[in-house]
Length: 224
Image (spheres, helix red, strand yellow):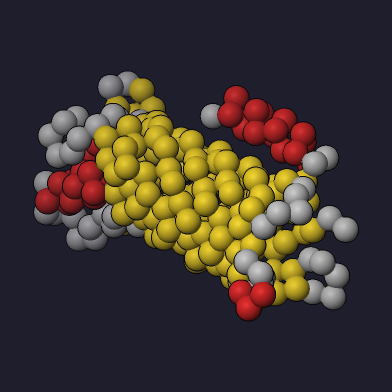
């Protein structure tokens, strides 16, 4: 994960010199991953003595930064990096369980700006390489499984569609509310069930499809 971050920073520094526009945004993130839901549901069924059930990994926050290259055309190229965090927390007597799910995505995008009547609307077509890290804490401490810290890494590819409405300030900068939908047809994370339920292959498959929906606000910095 650290190597990925270093590479991304180097790419961003390079693109800063050739960027026409830079966007930073924050959004609410809704996630649906069928196989991960099955693992959590199995965990809850096998522990009927828990008063508070373990919530699904559904709700989280995402932040991202985007560079868009200089071009006089409506269709421009760009690069995007995003980070998402989702948490599932349950508190029972002598048992406080928290799941921490992190996503880091590096993406190539096509940025399309409409003209005339739709001139304030833009669309981003996003193609991402996605990585994840899932951790489990019990009673405030990292949980150990087979004498190792419980963790699960994952990797996959995502496609997304983002639409926003640009509202300009007095200068060229501005803000835009946006919505984004994305799909990861195949995401490989073989140890996720072990982190969630301490089993492997019992309740879920080593891979899953992931669907996401986001709503948020972007801040645009445009070059003169």
